Image (cartoon, helix red, strand yellow):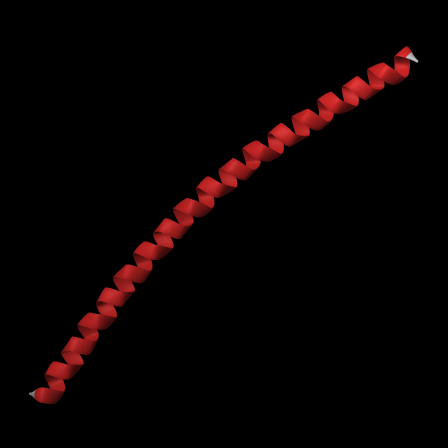
Length: 64
């Protein structure tokens, strides 16, 4: 019976370690994805600004 209890305790310890590692890994992914999203948003803002500039240039060419 003691052997079963020891194995059960060790199993729960291993499961806790796995869950802790999963939490750590997920936190790292969240940080990575947040940074990636920030970079993508910055690129979109740059591209929107550039499109607006090009549209203004085209309008100026058609008027002139």
